[in-house]
Length: 177
Ligand SMILES: [Zn+2]
Ligand SMILES: [Zn+2]
Image (cartoon, rainbow, N blue to C red; front, side):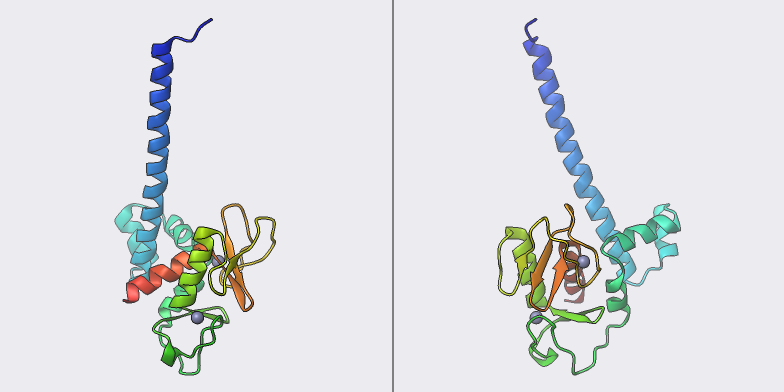
């Protein structure tokens, strides 16, 4: 039985529309979640965000926590840093660093975060960072999550950082500047 070319064309057209719509939903969801985290970083309480957006408190908590644990909430709430801190990765002191972010017992500067981001983006070594292979069981030093299909990790001799935590670093740095 030959395929009806008109019906086939219709199916192909619908498939293209679906793929496009799915891509748009993914992008919109990422933007939605980022905006919610930014509202929270900006000082809005989970309750306030939940009320304004008609979401449950738990849902907002989930969105806020989904970005690799909650180490960055602490970074944001304790913005004052003592003088003797330095980037764990490049070891330059804060006097030489324009931006420093504190994770749990680990610090990363804006330049090292950018290097890690490049390593993950291009899946090859960038400065101190190299992406770990997909089979690796390494953990992110910030959120403590392991390498997974949806969690790429960049490693260096001083520690690791995953794609989600790199993204959070960039969001915080962008909000500071
Ligand atoms: Zn650094
Ligand atoms: Zn992480």
